Length: 419
Ligand code: HGY
Ligand code: MN
Ligand code: MN
Image (cartoon, rainbow, N blue to C red; front, side, top):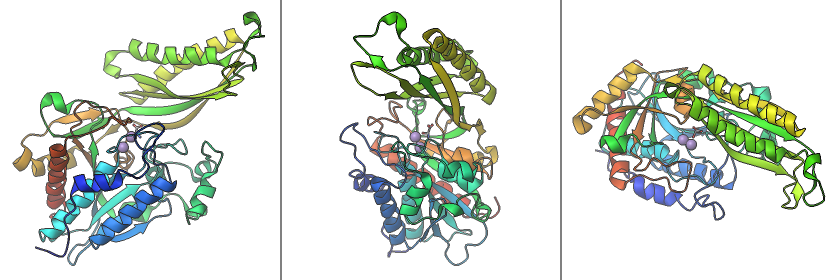
């Protein structure tokens, strides 16, 4: 036993985080890369991991790492963690549940006197939601070398502030971002706990599940340009209104997703629009909209997007508007490591029996790392499946069961060597 360490209670830790980035306008939480709320979340990570005696550092890509490497723990580490940033007006658990549960699990292992054969690392990955710079899993993609650094340095946020400026203001050197092969080599495997997004576990009556796959998914920015004019003085026949084309994009996204073969599990969403000038009595001159499309396989996504874009271009032609399409991100389909998932399932079995294995439509840093090292995910039941919304939640007993499961898995995985 190590009585010097205070075991972290996950529910209390989440309550401690609750005031940070609470969004009075949207509801829920808005915590975006290196804004004030994200900085407060990062400070919490340093404080909490430090209280456990972990070595805390931040890499050049603004990912945070907390490492437990006591005497005898050698070789590549078992890594866990998640992200602390959110979507605008997001829920309290998407990301933080994984980081809180990871630190809680480590605190449990230290307190019980566990002697790991290999180090344990807890990560907080930067900009997983891509809410500030538009690219999801930005920190883990940079770490893995999956995104070009010049492209990243050109990214700007909604206010037009450049990524380099934001990084420099926080003390980072944007010329040093990019692939960190040494850091990736430090990890033998990665296991991420995350609140379930979607509702598969509740009908199965299980508090915890294991991930099988992540849908292929991407984001496209469409810029629709017409002619701004007076809402009252302009005859209908002489209008070039990009809002009409935007309406077609929204309708077409749903229509083609619904019309896709069921086995493609297609879905398409327009959740963000930017209208210029945005006056209620002015015909828009420009509309920028973001299309989020997902499906079982990469080709299904590209086929779905092609059909939607074709409709939008036809609508643009009819309305005398121009249409430009830019792919902002694409994440290939992920199949999680079967052997690691089996090992995690075996560690969970004594306490939880046969844990269900479920696919997900939500992207994760684990999805990025899966191409570089053995990776698995544990999901904690979400009673109604809602996420990316203030209504996201999980029952306290399930949150605690999730920490039990992660603790059991990390204990088993750090008791062995190898991958
Ligand atoms: O968009 C996603 O699926 C993830 O939450 N970033
Ligand atoms: Mn999310
Ligand atoms: Mn997430």
